[in-house]
Amino acid sequence: MTRRQQVTAFWLGGLLAMVLMLFLFRQILLPFVAGAALAYALDPAADWLERNGFNRLAATTTILTILIVVIAAILILLVPLLINQTIDFVQRLPSYVTRLQEMFGATLDSEWARFLGIDPDSIRASISGFMSRGVDLATALIGSIWSGGRALVDILSLLVVTPFVAFYLLRDWHPMIARLDRLLPRDQAEEIRRLAGEIDNKVAAFVRGQLLVGFLLGIFYATGLVSIGLNYGLLIGLGSGILSFIPYLGFTVGFVLSLIIALVQFWPDWVWLAATVMVFLVGQLIEGYILQPRLIGRSVGLHPVWLIFSLLAFGLLFGFVGLLIAIPAAAAIGVLTRYGIERYRASPLFRGNGPSGM
Image (cartoon, rainbow, N blue to C red; front, side, top):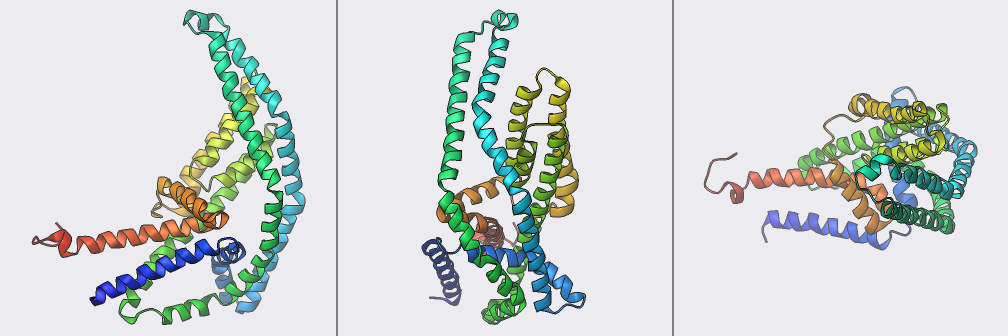
């Protein structure tokens, strides 16, 4: 076996061992992965405090204390309201479906529908079946979440460990990176540092930027929907912001739900229907032309399709832990794939007997 083959076998073996470890211990990894993600996200803030006179221990303690106070305030003030809105929405969902059926029924019985040869009874039956299946699906989803309350309690109990993991990782972040760096193979150290730096830049740009974009969008959508008096505007607005982590999902879900509720609540007042649509259109303009370019940038290199596939694949393999590691893994795989393509294009296998670069 040549030296290059040995190096390749070493890295492939390490990758397989890491994947196997994640799969075997996926049930207990949540607080450790969450703590590592939290430490990674907060490391720039700790570095900034260090540059302004704090030692590392004081910076770590200050940041985590502020974060815990903010999270506790959100849980106390906001979560009960969102839970009440969710329960009320589920209870009133059948009445919304009935009202929409009546509205569609009136449209199907109009003169122009009969002129076009539309059979109102068959269309009405299809709509009724579709909405009934939608209600059943939503009810089953809410029921599964509710019945999974014990699992949520288990997750919350595991999250008690997360602040401790985040504290020690954030405090010792730079010494740990230095120790890992000393373990790198000397011949490949510079190349590995370059690839790791590229992965770090892409992960940091996307994760930190997208979290901030989702937070700001959630505030904008919630404020806009509540200000026009839409029922469940706070729940839908904040949910749209959270789901915007997955491209187009937050906008689509929020827009469809808001439009359905607005039709039932405001019909036939077109002013408030238009206002509901405008909230999401303005939100998309703000996201596309202000937030995304300034907070994330154009060079992250994570295609939306690849991102969605990664979230689904890692979520299927590793559960909630997989969702936490999906974005870093997607960025790393993208960087390594581009590196592999570069090496392939520079190899005799690609070039053959021709000149380099053809």
